[in-house]
Length: 485
Image 1 (cartoon, helix red, strand yellow):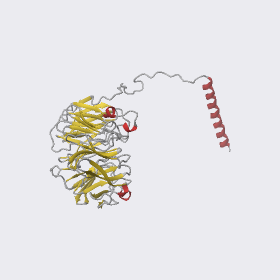
Image 2 (cartoon, helix red, strand yellow; image 1 turned 30 degrees about the horizontal axis):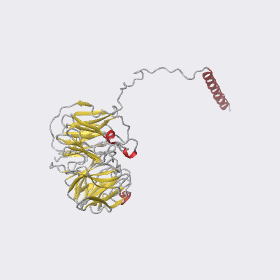
Image 3 (cartoon, helix red, strand yellow; image 1 turned 135 degrees about the vertical axis):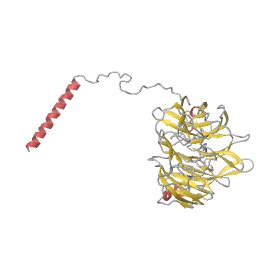
């Protein structure tokens, strides 16, 4: 009892003291407190530099390392030389690995993102984002050693939105083209990094005050540039559905009108030959279209359909046999098969079938790959019983799989990349576990698997150049030696 009484007295005394202090503070006119000016540097923060409102694309250049030697092999753009994600190089590659996996030749740190590499003439090109400096950075590395040779960069203030950079540059012997997260385009000399021209697609083609005239998608630009016959082919949306830019001087050579206000998706333009006509096929937000890729009518819209129009799409269109294409949507939208018809005068698009993710061939992020009449993909996490499995479909039937990896063989969230070389398929899951499969008809047999790095969100497209496989997670670029010993 005595203890409780003393405790009550102590609490009361503290309360009285606090109340008295509060009365003194208010009565003494201590509000507001005196505010002293904060002088630059007093809080030990770095000096703040005034930056212009407009982005000066490609403004800065750093020469860093010395080039060593050209290592053979190339992967010149998104999905490789033939836009099919298949390596056709004759370099002998390892048939299997021990549990430690293929050796890491070099590794470099990156800003958070999912952009992929392009490789040409012994150099690796990657668009990066420096979070500390708030800059887009096009970086050039030696394929053999990983030595960084140069950087071309510019200020652009971005907020993190599932990382930053998402695109793969396109490179030829003469030109290198990149698209930044906010649709800023650069064309450079691929050896020296000399800036040839730039294009701000947001400024040039955006329609102010109109939601459908906005250029950059919510999660930043995912469209990879295309260089075709020294013309950069881009799909801005807004005022232009598609454009062709002369890589030599930056002049816009042709522009496809956009009366239906189709918008830029996260997918990329894929050249196809359908009914003997070469065309650029693009799955935009709002519809799928084909634009003439050569001849007197280059840049003209050949066909369009709005029957397939998911809210978001990241995978690019896939050419099938019989003048058909497959298209995909994200977040459970699934896929569809579209037939392109030609009556001798004009083209038209006919929807053959469409399905939700649990009901047929689907992909949330990566574009499926076709080998020997079979389509392979990793199903998204909302695909029902097949979620996150490696699956195989026949080109003729996108609804019923002919092979699956099974419920005990799932791969991350179904967002990691995969690439084919010969009869081998390389698959990377979210955590940077690399799997090697042997392909036999519709089947895929697991040969080897290993943990490359302690990775996270390893979603960026991979590249194979000669004996090297280049992969990344959200923060690291890694080059592996997958050559035959």
